[in-house]
Each structure stands twice: as C-alpha cells, then as structure tokens.
Image (cartoon, rainbow, N blue to C red; front, side, top):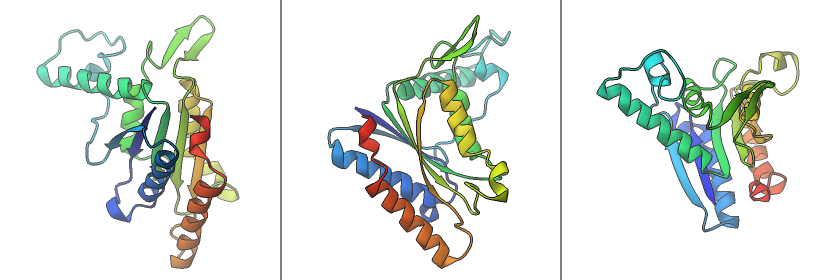
Length: 208
C-alpha cells in the first residue's frame, strides 16, 4: 500500500496541521508497517503555479513549442500525478488561509487534476477516474468555521471535498482543529481533541 503524505503549512515546526498529518501517518504505519510513504513538503519543494505552457503538458493549450524549463515542468506534472494515482491513501495537512487552502496546496491540486488521468470529459459531463482512494485531511483553522456565522466562509474543507469528488474520490475524511488563535488553553484543547479523534473515532486504516 502506498500513502501519499502532503504538508502545505508555511509555519514549519510551529504548524498544527503538520503535527496532525504526521499523527495520521503514524496511525496508518502502526496498522500497516509495510506501507510505503511518499512525502512531499509543498512549501520546501515549491510547485510553480500553472501557466499556459506548463498546462500544455497535460491539456490542450495551443502551445506546442517548449523550452527546457517548461519540459522540466511537464516532467514534474507527470511525477506528481503518477504518485497520486499510485497511492491508496492521501494524507494532507491543510491549514485554512484566508478562508481557503494554502496556495502551495492549490498548485499541487492544479497539477494532478488532469484530463485522461484523474478525470475525463463525456457527453454527460466530467467523470472522475481516481476512485477507490481515501483522502485524510488534517484541517486547521484559527476561528470557528464548522458551524456558526462564519461557516459560509469555509472555502477550505468544502473546496477539498469538491475537488477530490470531481476526481472520483468520495471518501474524504477530516480531522479538524479550530479556534487555534483564541488563546493557549483553547488551542491546546482543540489539538488534544483532534489527536483523540485520530486515535478513537478516526481509523485511517479502515479504508485500506
């Protein structure tokens, strides 16, 4: 079994989402010690955002002449989508930034959402090709967005569920820590609750 582990927080060792995503991977490895983990730090190993020439590596753009740097980006896109397709479990550390996902994670999503690889167009609309996987999201937020007046501004978890659903993945599970900017005690309690959820009610190996 291959596990793809992605982190996207810009906060390094101070990151809550990195701590939770690592805990998810550790839980998987305890149950599946032979699992192969592919790790990508999307901040340290930055993926450039799409431009027309880069996108032409996997979708029509009208551009057909490429320099060496662009060909290298085509190769990067192929590597990213291939390891995604080959993975049964995807673990993502996904902090909320400005009500959405980190730009680093968005860049990765743009590279793996490829026609013919992870979805296809049909006469009835697009169809996902990446089914059979489970996505485990370590979601962290400074405020409260899972309920209450700010719920309408949640373009983070809803976006991830929509994008992976578009690619055919219906099993998107979320471990969430909220109100992390509301003081030390509230932060500690939220993280403790998230860790307890991983160990008690969120069994990432169940879908393997």
